[in-house]
Figure: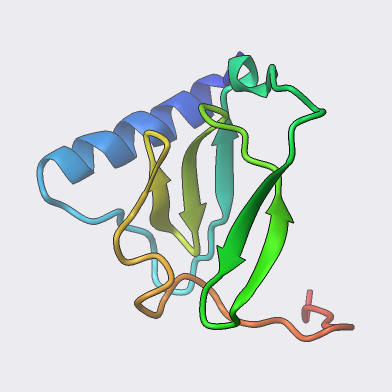
Length: 107
């Protein structure tokens, strides 16, 4: 079951996107949120899938869980909506920043 506040966030994101509006947040706010559908967790753990790592010419083992990840907000920006990757993900800035090993936040 998704918490009522999480449902409200998803509905707000979807409604804004349907109207062509961007997710708005207060200046300086950061939000990373992932909403999962637990029904999507019924997977075969014995299956193995390989995928190419773009720009590296290597293959890596991946664990795909179709239907599980419904929505992802990175730094307040939609990265996944209704299970689909947003076109800007990985191609434009603003989805966060690199945190080196050992990074500690100021708070």
